[in-house]
Length: 423
Image (cartoon, rainbow, N blue to C red; front, side, top):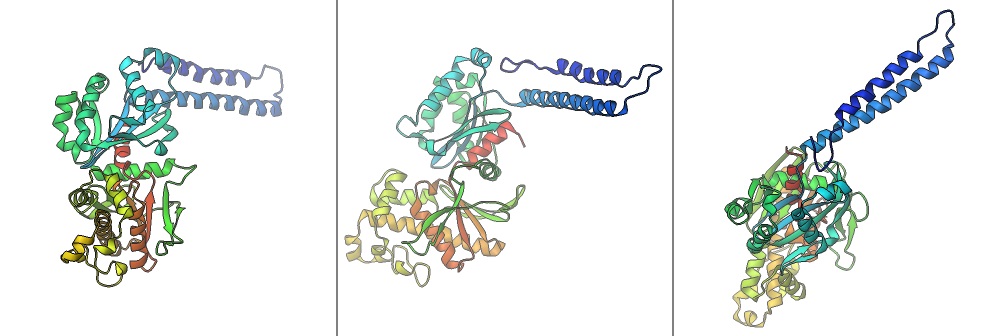
């Protein structure tokens, strides 16, 4: 069967397998009236067997390669995670395209690859996170780069229109997608872009993506890291962490909402609990209280604010009484507070709530390793340090908060893996 211009080589490999065997039998025959030279024959036999083994191995490799070519999907390869706030897209860019493949490649496919890889921004809100790109990966027998792209969910119609303009449906009729938006926007994909969504379980994709990315990031910056001395702001620094033998672990996915999973092995995990008070709550409240319009703007405000003007006893967050927004009951204090203070107090409130729930889950499940992921943590060092502080303080040093560089993209990676290796 032809695939991308390559033909199967099964017939040729059968002839090559038979040849060494015939030669070996011929070499072992002794002419009548002659004694065998035993040492020479012993040397010759292993040599012949080695040649046969090498050719058999080569044939097996070809068979495996041919089998992979028959089962892998055609390009382009995408995985999507459609969340309540952000759409995350991972795209595999093949770098081993042969001259023959390039000649046979349709223009639509070339156009999509050029558009995605030659730009770092798409329209006003689409971003390719170049610093997260993984190069020289091997997926399904192909070598290439993995790109990470995001855009706000409210701009999904513009993405679908782009797919329609570039005739994406002529290359694919089905996309692997996860997240709540895979259900919410299924009809839009069908009517606006002539595409079907293969909807995948969100938690399955998340776990699969985390384990895969951690396994392939072996050089350069470590995928996993933690904050040393989180209770001392002057000495708090980021340190790499090797996630070897990770089980059991508590996986806390902070997106628009929060899901907390107890992971005991690659295929044994459960959802422990969750909360609707996550990144979506933070952004919504900040828009309401400060007039900001983007996540980045809200975080910038929070970084400049002082929550003690808003919260009561925030200096003792992890010890005594603490009232989020408690000072706002006073008219005088309401009039003196700034938008930046309100943004900071909102961030602290949401983060502390997540940290408190996480600690209780870790105690109930008897798990000491906690990994935080999700797009709420993107460019959000402030919340990461707060979570690290909370885990360290409340557990008296028993719980360590771990973080991953690819934060919110693991669901999309899991969807891509399902496209290539259906479970």
